[in-house]
Length: 184
Image (cartoon, rainbow, N blue to C red):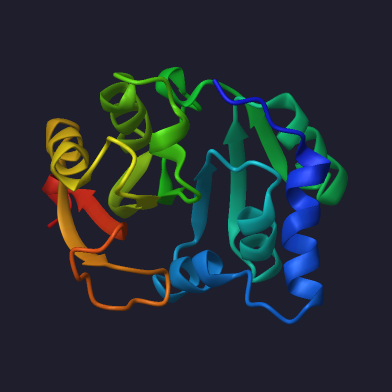
């Protein structure tokens, strides 16, 4: 498991934003799907979840890393931040959208991705979406992702090469949108 230092991690994005870089591509993508509630699974410092909440969406963030969550809690104490292993997550509710941004499937221990997908899928409401963006050049690719989603009862709706909705081109990054098979 990679250990992070939340404040240092967030400072990188703060510097990018201060320099004029667009740091809310994930939030823009999610907002366009018009969810009423979002589970930001693997929320880290809350960068995406906080922006979604600013846009009027109910957000719950979950992450296993205490340092990252401490940064999120300081930045937005009014939001719900849950310390949990996503492969065992059970919040007892569903969300209009479950988001895995920032390579979340790559940071779980090897072999636990099926459990990660299953537990995240269990939190997707009927008619909702599971949205994930991650690099494809680190040993866990789209074939495995799609198989894990199918095993969890999710079907692919659309796929892009970037959070800006650039067409999927067989590159080294993908953003995938899945929905429960019963909802399609």
